[in-house]
Length: 171
Image (cartoon, rainbow, N blue to C red; front, side):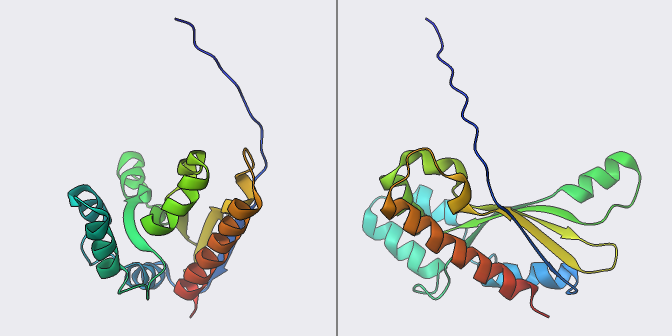
C-alpha cells in the first residue's frame, strides 16, 4: 500500500502581547477566567452520553456562557528544562484553553480546523518580571478550505482570544 503526501505552505500571524504584570499574577488571572479550578472539560466530554449532557456540563464549566473558554491543560516547560540544565530559567508555559461548543461549529464547517482546536498559547516570564503571551491568530493560518462563514467564525474567535488574554495581562 502506498502513502500519498502533500505539503502545503501557509503564513500565520503571530500575536505577541506583553505586560508588566508578573507571570504568577497573569497565570492566576487566566486560570480564573477559564475556570481551571472547575471540573475538567475532558471529563465532561468523555463522560457524556448525550448532547444534553454535554450542553449541561459545558454550561456548568462556562457559568452558563459567562465564560467564553475553559481550561484544557498547562505544561510548565521551564520547570523540567531548569531541572535538566541545572540552570534557573524564566517561566515558559504552554497553555491550552477552548470551548468545545464553539469548536463544534468550526469542525462541522471543516474538520481540518481540529488541527488548531483547542487554541494553544505560550506564556513567558520576562527578565524584567513581566509577562509575554504569544499565539497564532486562528483566522490567519486556516486557509485550506476557506468559506465566508468559517472566516467569520475564526475572526470571532480571534477577538475572543485577544479579549481573554488582554484581560489576564491587565495590571
